Image (cartoon, rainbow, N blue to C red; front, top):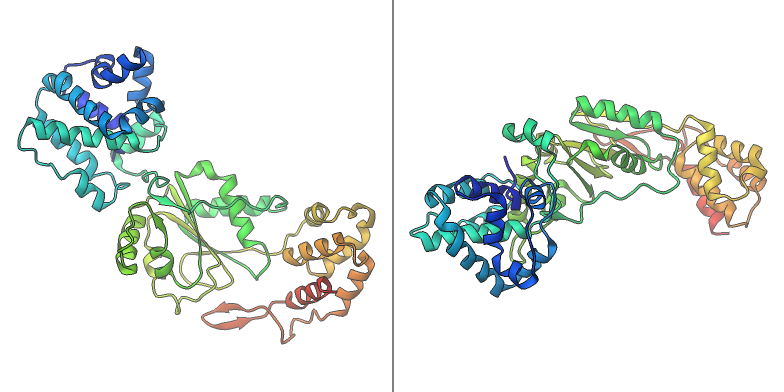
Length: 414
């Protein structure tokens, strides 16, 4: 479905009018043009009305004032409505445009469509201009004409969510992220075939940074990328999403229902990242709901799930990449290369342990040989009772990195 923006509203009006593009804009913005000695040319008018260039911000600001909005209605009533062949058909077309735009909340649709059906020409002018003013106020989204021709009629594109949801931008990966090129390509291939992917691995292996790097690397593949951090449960997560039309009096249940309905409308050109999904299928009753979303979802988790596709993220294999990471955090890494590599091997190439060791050495409290000696003293026995839990329906699986992390943190306190 077409997005209700300045371009689509104006094209709908022009389909019912005996006006060319320049005439239409001259009539519509007549008082602005006279006040500011502004002239409309065919090339710029065409780009505005095709959605290839944003309408002048000065025009938007001018008509954003309440008294100037009335001027827009007078312009329309005086010069454009007489050129409309059938204003009833036009109001119906605009009604359908708003109604079918899934990026507009149901409550705001009711407000926009309040004058429909219009009892007379005066109500029709107010109805049309209210929609036009709303469309002008929306953030501009460039139209790709090739994509529009191919996909809009079939409704396979998600709405642009940036004007509806706020605070869900995915963070950039840490500036020293490295060593996962092969895994990024693998995840890309997997996600092209599977809409729901669980990136699984022990704590501290770098799952969150890996997924952030994936979003940065393949951001052009998606219309929208949304990021959420899992804390308590999915119902609270969804209810707590910041939507532009949320009201202070809305209950959590009301927000959940409305937000969930909107998320269900997103297509597979939208990617949702749910980070830190460290729960179990039996503990999360709404997992089945999210698994039915049409959009793509990546979970980062220490747990194992039978649904979706599980992609296991293991230690970085390439020692040079880990040494590069170490070097970015420890300025004397090159001078102590042999010992640094031994430290990396001593912590089993565990990403967080490598980072902690590098930061510890940069503090200058211990030498590289001292840190290596301390790490070799700590237990790395897979049977150790102190271990990170990787859950599968509540059952623990052995992991071998806890002692390294505990030792490194204890050295930080020295």
